[in-house]
Length: 385
Ligand SMILES: *Cc1c(COP(=O)(O)O)cnc(C)c1O
Image 1 (tube, rainbow, N blue to C red):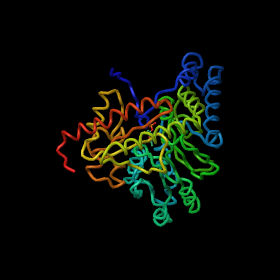
Image 2: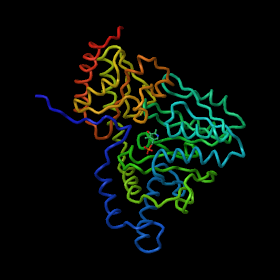
Image 3: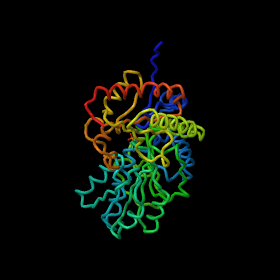
Image 4: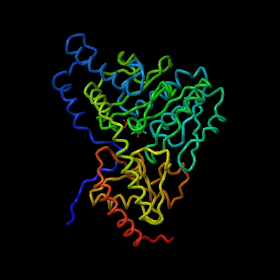
């Protein structure tokens, strides 16, 4: 008998909030609802939770507590990093480098600076989505003030050599920012070893709540705040802190385990190997080796990814074509374009992203359905091989 399962494979877009996270957050709505800036006991309770959470987050990347600023999410962290550094250092130079496969919150933040007189250069990537380090080294100049290259890509899962990039930037006295929203808790980050100056995080990609994020700002880094107002977050981000959200974020960080990475990696490999073996004219997008433990991104030639996604959705399997942010437009995602995919390749792209909750049974079910769906769509497609 056909049993309809609900299989969520869109964890790069957002994740299910862990039950433990919800449980940790609830008292901060019901009991400890004070404003951390208030001087009475209710305020102190909230302030204490805020600082405890900051400590947890700082410890997880080997940073100091004072180096963590809470924000409303990955997008705000990226905006603060890019614009905040550009404005603080405009006396030093006007040139900014970003990779061509950044999240829109980095790309658009950087592009917005062009009309303010900055020169923004987008670094090309190779066919696996890796930036060319020697090219970066060759291109940066005495005018360069900031380089931003994401740790792991949200669409194709490629992990960049940020340790090496950070080292090059440090040597040339250039600020280096990395968007670690996708890699956080999946690839280890130690700020004593990786000399990045700024790192962006988001809670809802790691089983925390939406609308909370953080920015690591290395001690001594000059940065201009982007939200004016009160003196919260060391005057770097005005606004009453989202205490329940921040508590939930910290809980989500604590829940992360190395064993989950291994588990996801195993299921990811089972998915990738079986799809490549059982479906003809199909390719894996992104690097096979330098790849996030939960990402599988394929191109099925001669079929539309949208159509596959719609079919899978009717089977209760939730996937994505390209990134969620560019889904409303039918243009190729900038990432798939940057790695050089041909139209028939990007049109047939499908992303499946796993979580610690993904089971072997779920992947087996997908592996049973997906080849049939692709076959059916190919039969009715006019595309000729
Ligand atoms: C989701 C995501 C963001 C944005 O984070 P929000 O918290 O949703 O604003 C930024 N960068 C990457 C790589 C992401 O995957």
